[in-house]
Image (cartoon, rainbow, N blue to C red; front, top):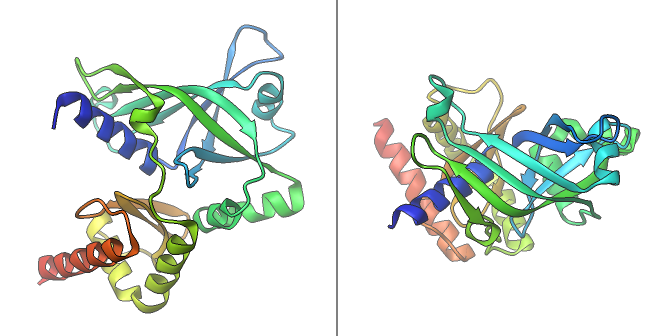
Length: 239
């Protein structure tokens, strides 16, 4: 794989796995200055971040006046922050009817349901235009959005069926995946909340982790084979 392709893959993985970032809007109170807020997000079927924002918040008021924003993500970890992956995206934040993604969002962030149902929070989509990736010294470069954003090859119905089946019939495997990914036993049961071409998303209480699939998938059949391979590998590693 060429260096540019490796960097694009790393940038995509960070976009798919961070689940929160710093949203920079253009201040209406202090014209010409940026205003930063930390926001959670998940990716919609097209691969774009979906946000749930309060209509009373400063960043939402800024967005309604000027939708041009930036979203900055940081790779998890410790040590020198400048050696960790960083991804900055510029684009537009637009209000949307999230449709089928509403329940998916609440699978990722169940605590946010009350914000929408009782406090009138609204769904927005961040539509990236360009990405700037920095993976450490001498690795910074710009990418067009089509190099980083990836649509989910599985239909929303197929995703929902796989998630429901795994959660209902393979809870032990999910716990094993969680232990493998975090090197610890969670205080709450791990559940699957999402699957796409390159990974699965698990949640235990308020913590979300993304785990790479052993190979990329494009169909339900390939997803089943990849999950079986993961389960076999985790069991073998634990023996």
